Length: 448
Image 1 (spheres, one colour):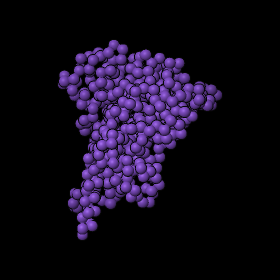
Image 2: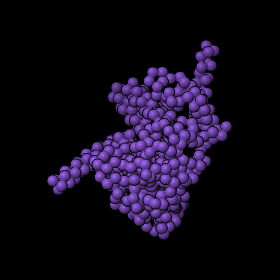
Image 3: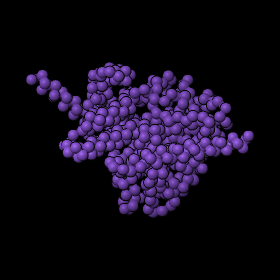
Image 4: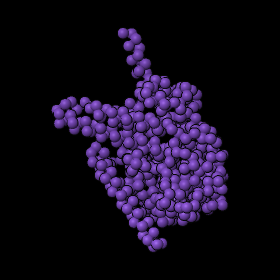
């Protein structure tokens, strides 16, 4: 019976992986076609730019005997060491080298994610191109004067292109019930986490340092089998990982809880922007094809294309304005310098306010509008959808909403709306321009 059970489990896993791969392959074929041309298009994300600089000899990466190229690439890509988080579940490319004793480290800024594994063969990169979205690379961990960044040709999309990434090449933070060797327990569910996720479902298979009061998460612990209940209490509110794992091989001893929360939000914000980008380009492409067929003006957008672009704008706004954000019931505090490092990178208005300012008492940010509105990915959205986002954002912040939007944006108080609007008028020129144009239009109407 035991042998049969193992056979059925193996067959089930193979079937699931085969089905997942088939779906991802179909998605990849979709991205490979016009108008996306995912792998055929040259990208200009920070890793691609660094790769070209290294190849030309303009930039050099120093090799460290312990951590290889990690310190050099973090510096070159302007990624703070304080962003370090540690994941011990075997849920990524170099899984055979990952365990609770040797977790994988992830570092990030607003454009790039870097994965480092002790004694790993490569450093992994996921970078955001303003047009093509998430692009994946590896860098071999061997001493050489001109190391080569290798761009992925679709293998990474097996995991990084599914409903977990909003059906675009994208990013995901997974929370699993991890066993003592780091393998996920296949008999239990997994979670893809974002700012809307219940706290209790977050960070299974991750180390977490920081305090969070009475709230509980899945981090810092394992289960032996599917029948065992996870212990969310014993290793809650840890300020150090000293009793769990040696952090000497890493640049930082932390796996900061605030960094984890920001990364969860940012990954799904990136995905929402990429989906809006792809969906808009496809809608326009389809409309242009129909226009040629019917001998209509190429500038005409069909009603169905208009609806698709409206839907894409709504998805961006939903993530941008932190809709459905999990309400914190206890204050959260990290253990590293990440909180101050992150806030220091923010653009500030005339009253010294920034969308990067944290709250961490009842919600993540003091002003619930994502700092990703300043990102190159947002600015790289096609005009047709970006302008819709900005115009509707103005309406929402003015309280000018109807229908289902009344409930969707009810979490924004009048003060929230006013603060966000003032910050954006001071710091986002395109938003300020939209406000001025619409004010002028109203004045012109009143004169008539």
